[in-house]
Length: 69
Image 1 (cartoon, rainbow, N blue to C red):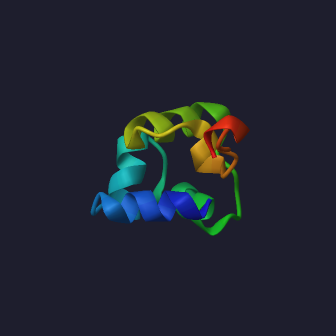
Image 2: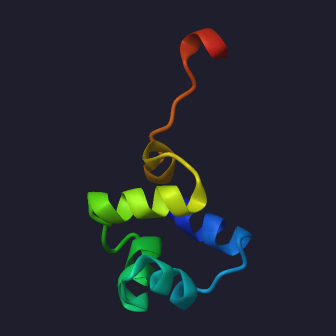
């Protein structure tokens, strides 16, 4: 979940600030960034909405369609 750290830093937020926005503990959020834990689907949706990106983007599964390359 390297993208989480990039997105968070781009907004100038600390882990604690973002965790508060999401309603989770800073420790839980830190584990997501480290890759020690994966967020549940509800948390993934909150993160995607907060950063205005897709869940696919967050999990690194976003693809460019073949006809758009």
